Image (cartoon, rainbow, N blue to C red):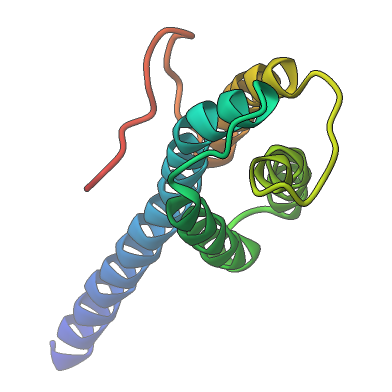
Length: 147
């Protein structure tokens, strides 16, 4: 009898641990999408200002968002599949071009057009996150972001 109780306890504990790590994995994947989304929004005005020859504001926020994205990408390296982590790194490099342009660290052809392309990259990354998390949602359904 006590052996059965121990086995039941172990099984329940294993399920609790599995549920915990599924939750952690979900949170990391969503944090990556949220960080990129925030970075994309923060880049709009500085890129447009720089393209028109003006000195942009909000550059401290851009630097902080770059740091945030790098941090969540580190978590994705642990919790995400390799293909998703590699895709997110590629997206990061594209974002970084606009970021460096906004900070006047890089010359960029058609920067506003390039900045708009970031939204397309985010759609692709969002789909890859859905696949990694096995979320089946229509194309117009947002992956939920927890705050």
